[in-house]
Image (cartoon, rainbow, N blue to C red):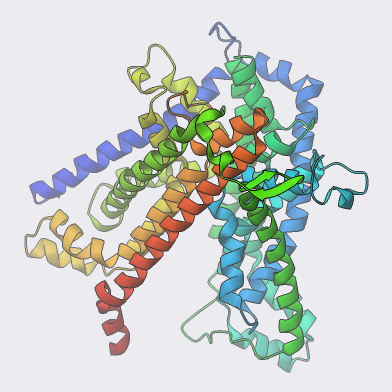
Length: 560
């Protein structure tokens, strides 16, 4: 294009092209390698769909696929109604303590997915404190997996449904009430239809997370086989990358289906609020608020129990026989799993992901949203940015092994390094961060960049002096999200670590395999504490910015 009027705009194009190339290498190429490997024999010869035919004919795989689907549906049947009721209580009631309940409901996001499984072992395992509650059943199997997945997926569903229920037109409820509709009928005919997009999205997210989760089935699954464990066994146990690639593609299917349904719904979704809409304000109803408060209390007790038991067990000498206090479980260097170096590696990786990931994603979002760059390049960046949404972490990690471990790849030197784990983690969580920052940038008036260009100011001057300060709250949200996700991720890096780059979440898995459950709980507790401290630190920074550095927002509201 010859329309670029200055060297700085050409620089923006070259910078965006470089970012697009990096996204092709670290997002698209690993997935293409996995698809290619699924059609190859163990010696690299092309055999077409023979791997598929052989693997699909195995009863073991069919059982694993059936188990994964059944566990996903069972978890969905529990999580979706509970999350809907909880979100309704937070947004459509005047229940006391809504902020506290929200914080408790989102607390599981601070913990690795293995922590609820460890807590369930301490509560209902062979030596569990509440083993008698199982009435002869065992926690090692579908019951334990479903309970662990409920803990793991509940906050994800709640966030989506809270957003879906937070905005509604009060006139619809007034019209239904005028027509004599009961409260239940208003819920069925007004609330649920308006929230259908969020309900479907939450259902797809929960089902995909359960089917592709690796940590909980590994710790508490017992003899129950699922697709994610089967992929792990094929790659790590048997070094059969071809069959692992086939299972990886199978794991990709529910996520791709979810992505397609979400895209279809978004195209057919109409806005619920218009310029004439009146925001719904719930009326006082003590019976409704009391019932919802009881439900929220029960859910909160369940979540806090699984979170708290794991943390408390880290300081108990020998659960449940000797409940005295001890620090001995934190002596990681005397145990298998990676020692304290694993925790330091996690902190290091999380900080690198937070710094470089936030910077790269914000720059790419700014270039796409605010500068006159070629439309084809913008479409490419946006498509690649959305791709990780449809790729489970286990599948992406497997793709990284197949692509970067290939001897002929000039980037082979990255394999086994901390740098590759950082890049894989950024790629895995790219979509949410990109959408958050793009949404924030779209709220800024586009005339800011136009005025800057008319004054012959380079785009990076506007970027540093205007756009970045105005978008700092969203930037902090993304930084917090990337840090916590980096500390808790397991599936994305399970195939990429070495003894020198083992992470805290992976050390939990290794220590649990070695029978050091208390030490695993101690490491999980460290992850929760560090994630909580960083969250509080960033929340404090956000509060300071909103009161000191974001005065322009208050001025703009006063003028309105």
